[in-house]
Amino acid sequence: MSKANFELRLVETPGETQGKEESPSLRALPTGGPIEVAPTVRELTPYQAVSSQAAIESSPDHQTSFKLDWNEATVAPSPRVNEAIAAYLSGDRSLNWYPQLGSTELIDALTGYTGVDADHLLVTNGSDDGLHLICSTFLDVGDEVVIPVPTYNHFMVFTRSRGARVKTVCGDDPFTQNLDEIHRAVTPDTRLLYLVSPNNPTGVVFGPDVVTDFCERYPRTLIVVDEAYFEFAQVSSIGLVRRFPNLIVTRTFSKAFGLAGLRVGYLATDPTLITGLRRIYNPKSVNTLGQVGATAALGDLDSLHEYLQEVRDSKEILRDFFEDRRVEAHITSANFVVLRMPDLPTTLQSLEDRGVYVRDRSSYPGLDGCLRMTVGTREQTRRLLARVGDLFT
Ligand SMILES: Cc1ncc(COP(=O)(O)O)c(C=O)c1O
Image (spheres, rainbow, N blue to C red):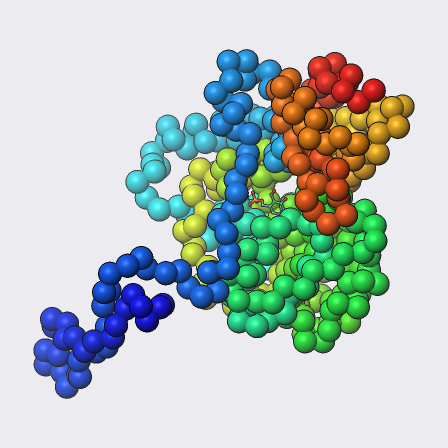
């Protein structure tokens, strides 16, 4: 709060002194001018949401556009999701009540899906909400946070808003784990280490062996493993939360389950850390339809596995395609590929001119000339290559 905009004056508020021996309290009274953000937020710039959604929706042939820029699922979720939401809306429970506190039914379903007990789980409003909650709960001004890059940058906003010091680690090859570099950066005083597995955008996986090593070597450091894309790689550290009290794994329904619009995620960790997180956690932050939809999605894992197989097959089609044309293509373990193009701006423009929206990742460390493209079903991939394949010859 800046001195220029506020002055402190003694004011008496009605009722405050009635029947009590209370002295008047100090209140900050505005004296004009804009109210400034908190000092830790001052250095941050607003998140540039550059989703192609608006452009696609306003285009006359939007039905045939390819939205491949945000790694969402390229198909609708399991039909059971819509059925469950429709049944909920037509039943006698309506939307005038707050959601089920603590998402208990969804937590029940998640215990089966994750193999982790309910006291280790917390459902969040998307995994971003979980990541934000972790930073709000465990970080303070000056705390050191180590982040291997390139990665999901939004986490840095949450850390910086707490006044934490971010130490990024970048190895020579962004498509490898760069473990030596990470170990050189982490010290016993590092407060938090953020690993994304599979990493966005490189697809690098940090498996349970690596995570175990981090948890054991740095017992005073909170190890956060962001598994937003876990389903595609099927490698997880979630079971380790039973063993290590310094590990948090976050996950989401936004990617493989196709529920990005409903905003549901969850985290798994030691019950002691859950107790800490609950000091800030808002038990009504996950909306009713999100809870109903996510629970229904967990009831139809066949649908999930069909989609995962489609994405795996598509990645093989893309691998062959780009290999044949000698394009530098990183076919990741997640639902996206990274391509390095000799003339990226022209490629991006040509793709967009044909209704194909991908993400420019060339400003990320080690990714000059690179774009990231979401992978969809086999049929979608064939149609995609028929439309833009000639741009890669
Ligand atoms: C690595 C990673 N973590 C978290 C998120 C946020 O996902 P959610 O929709 O669950 O907030 C994303 C979204 O792109 C992501 O790529």
